[in-house]
Image (cartoon, rainbow, N blue to C red):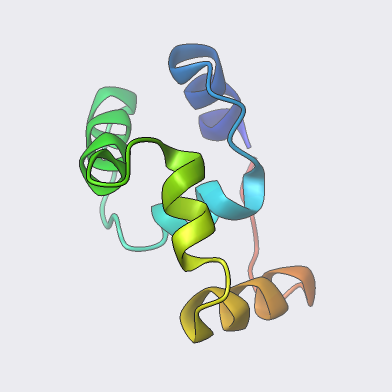
Length: 79
């Protein structure tokens, strides 16, 4: 949660926690905030914005499964 809050302060883009966690799940290890921002920008750059990218994947099976698991408390979110 601290990481997400710091990300929002730096990126100032209004991304929600669910989508943040969806993108973050594939970034292994202990990246610093700049690495996280760079990773997200690289993923979303082709679509124009994170929101455009979200709209392009929100109905995919991968995102639907993640949302179901996330909202079903399958994942533990650290502080």
